[in-house]
Image 1 (cartoon, one colour):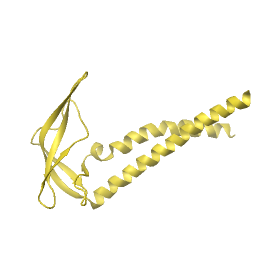
Image 2 (tube, rainbow, N blue to C red):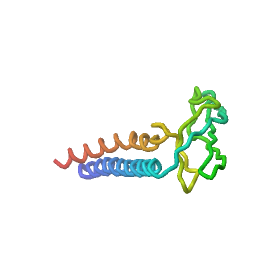
Image 3 (tube, rainbow, N blue to C red):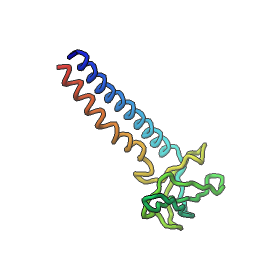
Image 4 (cartoon, helix red, strand yellow):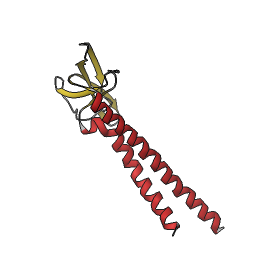
Length: 142
């Protein structure tokens, strides 16, 4: 019975460690893609053309829509994946962006949260899993 219980805990904490490693790897991949975009991408200034209102039970949030001209002087529209309340921007605000030379649909606002939100959120989830899983497994291996 004790061996079965020990195996159950090893599987649980081993799963925590494995999941933490997978999430950390994905976070690192997103970080690398962002760094590549910053190095190889085209920087531009976009203008907030409108704020879309999203209604839910907690109230309204606002999603900015940006317009910018790409290298071919074509007007592009980019809808931010981030909504906030109060709105982060006002209509007419100028915002620095970076977009991929080959795919002008791959756009990020040049701000910490705009560039690194996926990596930060994934590492926030991965970190406790890594610490808990690795600590237990190291403790049990002594």
